[in-house]
Amino acid sequence: MTAKNNISNADQFLNIFHDVEHYLKNKYNNGYYESFVRLVREASKVEHVFRRYKDDLMTYADLRNAIVHNKRYNGVAIAEPHDEVLIHFQKIWKEISLPLKASHFNRQVYYCKFDDPLKKALDLMHKHMISQIPILNYGKLVDVLNGNCIAHWLASEHNPNIDETPIQTVLDSAEYSGNYDLISESTSVYEAADIYRKSFKQPPVNWYYDALIITKHGLAAEKMTGIIVLADIAEYLHE
Image (tube, rainbow, N blue to C red; front, side, top):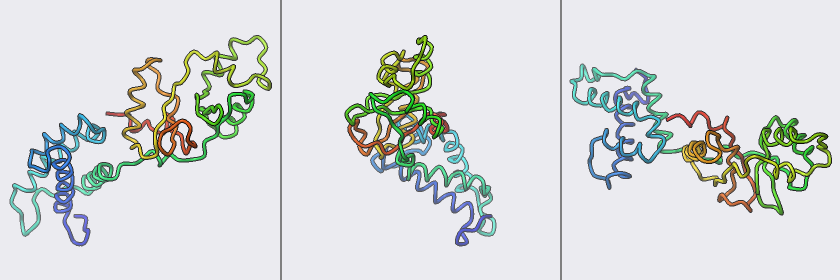
């Protein structure tokens, strides 16, 4: 038994269960009673966090029933959750109640302008170990340059000159353009993951967005405050 102010694992588990159930009732049933399992099913149609943990929450509903409906021995629940179960349930509740925001990925964004030479972008990629470079034109985000785009242009040139060729020329020759999206700092990581997931089914099909660009309100003319690439969001893409 893990003590938290001398509260048993079972009672801690029931407290978390009550918080999750209260959240579900208020959001999906106007505060009225409905079975926990049905509420989880409804929520999983809308919120990725519930889709991700649906099976766990269904199992925890069974565990809750076992704790509540079985007799206690000397005041201790017979069905006492393991420490690992309690820790995992606490993690789930935290992700439900305090979802991680896109602002978690705020960082310096290295970018180039339309008329910058390709070499500048390549130097940034090499120096900072990055694969995506946002491109601005008159201070507004217009595209994202990636390694595939550069490789496609290089393959089409007999004598490429990276010192003189403007990035706009490279982008103009790209097979696909605009393969990114803008999100606000308040976007949850689960919403961001959904945007990435949906992008896989949009043209170009079977290809995720190159990046999600973060600004305060998700507007192209705003200062970029962060960037999310596939490696950042991968763990949230699983159903």
